[in-house]
Amino acid sequence: MRVLVFSKTAGFRHESIPAGVRAIRDLGAEHGFDVTATEDAAVLTAALPASCAAVVFLSTSGEVLDAAQQPVFESYVEGGGGYVGVHGAADTGYDWPWYGQLVGARFKTHPAVQQARIVTEDRAHPATAHLPPVWTRTDEWYDYRASPRGRVQVLQSLDESSYAGGGMGADHPITWCHPQGRGRAFHTGLGHTTESYAEPAFRALLLGAIRYAAGGLPAA
Image (tube, rainbow, N blue to C red; front, top):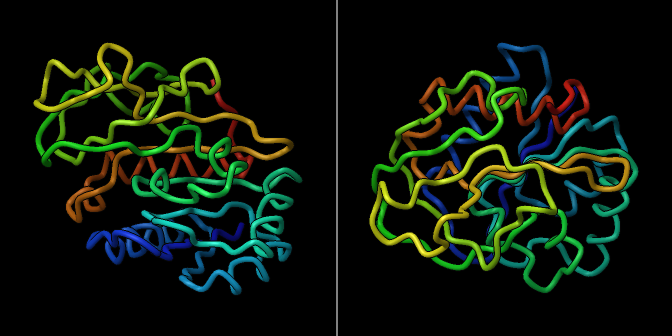
């Protein structure tokens, strides 16, 4: 299995990107899949037909694929490829309507990095089966322009009573997945901090996300 990690930024750039690339490379070495990392959209789209099981958009931002490259990626996913969006991936492709469907929800704002409680809504999915019913950790908690619930399978949500500055209220999904054509899409808002990528539980979430997107494991 081959996984591409794409971390091009045309807007805000997260300091955690190198740690995220290292973590996914480590997961590949530990679990038997090849990992290629690039920030070149031309390399990404040229490599897609070549037995790539999944693409991870690792805290991408802004407009990262041009008008000629976007249909290549769309065809890849719609034809059976896998997509995993991590954190800033929701702050990407605002001028690309199809990508809005793929990622599931668009970034709106966030409060300061702080501890919060994450409710595990689905404990059967391969990305969240290892987690407790309530997982307390520190990260940067994105608000989205609209909740994706009803259009996606919500795996985790935030308990806004557990931190300051949340803006979505009682329904605040933070991790979800859904089919996209013949492919699979997964997104998590977690992963802002460099420390996230050293957390065994978060690494296990990423591993389950990649395996799901690649088609190796079913959802619940």
